[in-house]
Image (cartoon, rainbow, N blue to C red; front, side):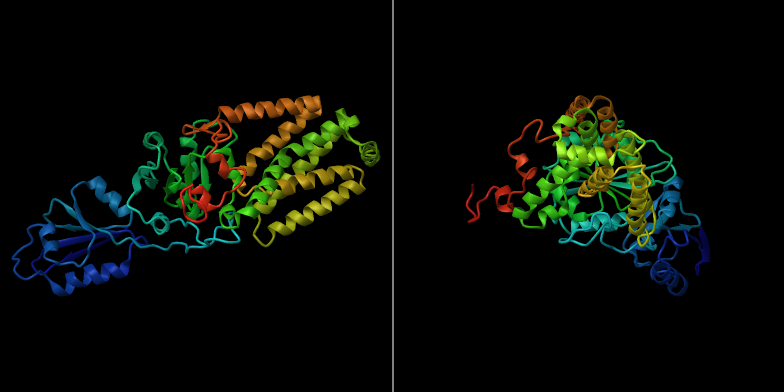
Length: 458
C-alpha cells in the first residue's frame, strides 16, 4: 500500500492512499498529482469547505469520482484498486476509479477450439468478459446483476440474463443460492458451481462451463442464465441438459446436412465410450454363442496364453489408458500428445508380446478411447469414464443381465435428475416435439425461427 501526503498552498493536508500495481500510476500523476502541485486551489474558493464542492469546480479532471464516509467501504475500494483522497478536517473521503493492472489478452479457447466461428475466448478480467457478451447481444433486455462473494477474496460475480426470456423462478433460485454462499474465498467459478447444484453427489454436472462468448450469448438468447466470475475465464451456464455436453459450437457453424451425420456419429460414439468394454466381456465370457464361431475361435486363440480373466485385462488396460490421458493433460503442450501416443503404443505392444494382455483387448480399449474423444466437452467425458468402470464390473459378474441392470439404473438416475427445474433428459423425457428438433438433428436456421426459405411464416 502506498500512502502519499501533500500540503496545499493554504496549508491543507491531503493524503493519497492506493495499492501499488493495482492502479494506473500515469492517471494518478496526470489527473491528481500535477493539478494538486502546480495548479493550487480553484479561483474563487477561499478555503476548502467540502470535497464534493471542490471537485464540482473541476479541480481534478476525473469522471468517476464519489465520496465515502464508511471506513470499511473505503478500505474495500482501496483493495479493489481505487485511489482514496483524504483531506484534513473532512468527514468523508474521495474515491477515484483509477484501477489498472496487467491482464491476459483475448485468445482462442484451447479446450473449445472450432474450425469455424469466433476465435475469441474469455479472460480472467470480469469487465472484459462482460464486454465480449455485450458486443454480441446489443439489446437493452440484456441485464447484469453484481454480487460480491467470499469473505477474504471479495470476488465479483455477475448474473447475466435476458429479461423476459429467462425463467423468473430460475433467477430467483440463483439469487437465493448466491446469497447463501459462505466461503473464505472464491478462486474459480467451480467453487460457485458446487454451491448451486441441486444434486451435488451426482456424477453428472447440472451446470455447464465454457470459455466461449458466442456460446454464452446463444444460451442467453435461448433463455438461460450465465454467471461470470472475476479471476477465471470459465463462465457458468444454467440450466442445462445431458445433451448440452454432447453438442459442439461447430454444429452451428457448418451446414446442417453434415451436422446431422456428425451428431449421429457422436451419439453412437458416446455410447461406445462407456459400453464397449462391458459388451465385450459379456459376449466373450458369458454369451459366446452370440458371437460368430470363427470370430470367437480367434478371440479364444488370442487369449490362450494370457494369465488373467477378461474383466481383469480390460480393467488393467483402461486404468493404464486413463493414466496416460491424465499425464498428457498435465504435461506441457509439446510433450503431452507425444507421451500419450508413444506410451500407449509401447506399453500396449509390450503387454501383448509378454502375454499379459491379448490383442483384442488392445483393440477394444483403443476404440473406447477414440470414442470418448468425440465428446466435445472435457467435463462431459468424466461421468462416462466412471460409468465405463461400473458397467465393466457389473457385466463381468452377471453378463448381459448385469449390463441391462446398469443401463436401467443409469436411465432412472438421469430421469430423476434436474437442473434448476429442467429435467436432465429433456426434451426426450418428458418429450417436447418442438425442442427435440435441435437434439438429434439440426434444422436450418430459417426452420428453427419458424420461417420457410422464402421468408413466409411456416
